[in-house]
Image 1 (tube, rainbow, N blue to C red):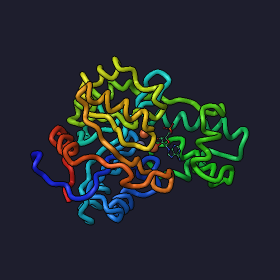
Image 2: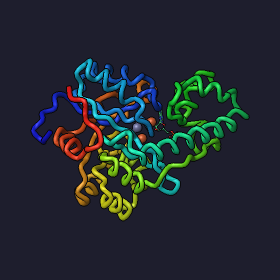
Image 3: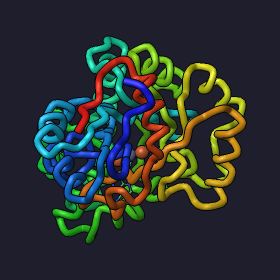
Length: 289
Ligand code: AMP
Ligand code: FE
Ligand code: FE
Ligand code: ZN
């Protein structure tokens, strides 16, 4: 495959299914992407590739291009940093070992948070498990959904703004690798790493530029520039950083089904950038429409 391929329709490179904290099965998500008029979609569940096979089958059925991906949880000091990874080998031992460790840590951390919340609100661990399917990468969204099911809060977003916010006192972090280690693991598995929503914490709290340079040195491909959590001022700053470090920029929705207001295709990636991702991705193949 070379850069001559023409992609038909909008390209959205960041979505979540029920395998992590989206609300649709991978198949439903792919059909929703097709119905929304997308030409290419990447499935990027948190710390898991479990959805890839179902998504691939659905993509073949509806004839949409699928980029298999994942959103890798990493941690830089106190900050949670998300790294999108595309077209890596899902059987790579480094990826399997690290993601298993993260999922286990997420599970333990969610149980601890629920024990604390359960002391003050009607919430049990079984309520949270009822919001998951076997193998789900558990996160605060599932605790949020359980609080909604219990009638404690009206929506998932309300839970995030209240009980699940670190200010409320129930928050607990979980183990996640250093972003540099994650970039190295993704490249070693033939994948293409992109820093997700780099300005989620605001323009004043962007990753230190020397740190970013280290990630670039290790093989970081790009920055997710067009994302609703990057505000205009931050975007301008990110565009400068991308140009200075020779990074590509992507755009995507970070769709979570009914779990977040983000809509499929609300931000998109340029076809030339997808060409470059495909040219560099050596661990697994896209499903072409
Ligand atoms: P955690 O990783 O467990 O700390 O939870 C943070 C995750 O919640 C991020 O991946 C967010 O994308 C996700 N999330 C899902 N739905 C929402 C929502 N409605 N508001 C805020 N975050 C959300
Ligand atoms: Fe999420
Ligand atoms: Fe994220
Ligand atoms: Zn995401």
